[in-house]
Each structure stands twice: as structure tokens, then as C-alpha cells.
Image 1 (cartoon, rainbow, N blue to C red):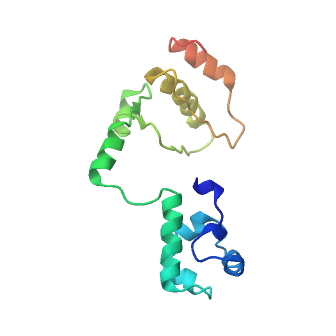
Image 2 (cartoon, rainbow, N blue to C red; image 1 turned 180 degrees about the horizontal axis):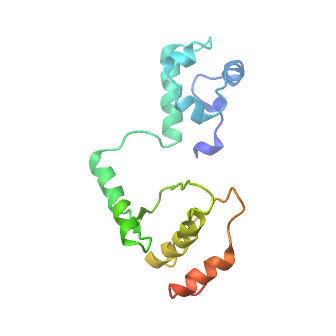
Length: 158
């Protein structure tokens, strides 16, 4: 729902205030949600109580906020580890790479970053065939034929 809203949907914001907010760089709900009341009142025409309401509204619509430790624990219990196939690397990574996370690999050319990324794309399927991997390739190194080789080697049907 938050994605469909604009800053003009914020409480206390009309066209003139929206224009001032946009001119100051607050052109999305996210920009308002992470702002401080002082930043919004500095724009002019926004009182502190209104700024607080705007921020609270934006955070609610974007489903931002605090969660209890119990809720966080329940979420963490759903996290699985994707094993790399290397016992030593898995040990360094605390059992493998966590699902639901973004992992970045960096290093010199030819150090094996792409090979590990290809391998992990396949190995996530070993946890569940419905799992999905997103490979963000900024250097044009993704090779689908390598994925097929690794999948066959892991006993999967590519």
C-alpha cells in the first residue's frame, strides 16, 4: 500500500507543502519516514507535531518500525544456511551463507568470485526446488552453461 502513496497523502500536507518538501529532497514516503522532525520543520510551513505525524504515517504505510526480540527470534529461526561444499569455507561463514540475505564477493580478477556465485545459485536449490537465487552480474561473467554443469553434478535437473 505504501508504494501507491505520495507525499501529498501525508497528514497536513497540501500542494504548497508538497512542493516545498520536494524542493528540499523529500519526494518519497521513504525520504519522509527516515527524516527527523527537525529536518521537516526546517523546510518551513511544517510544525513539529505535524512533522511527527507525517513521519509516523510514512513509517506505518511502509511497514517500518520496531519488532520485539521474540518476533526477531521467530524470523531468524526461518533463516537457512546454504552450504558452499567447502567445509573450511562453511566454517568461516558460520555454517554457510544465510538465505534471505544479500552477499557480496570481492577480490582480484580470477580469484573465484564468479565460480562461488555460480555454485551458490545451484546449491540453494538443494534446500528446496522452489528456492530462487538472484545473480547480479556487473562484469558480464555469468555463464548459464556453467550453471547447467554444476546442477547436473549436484544431481539436479537443470
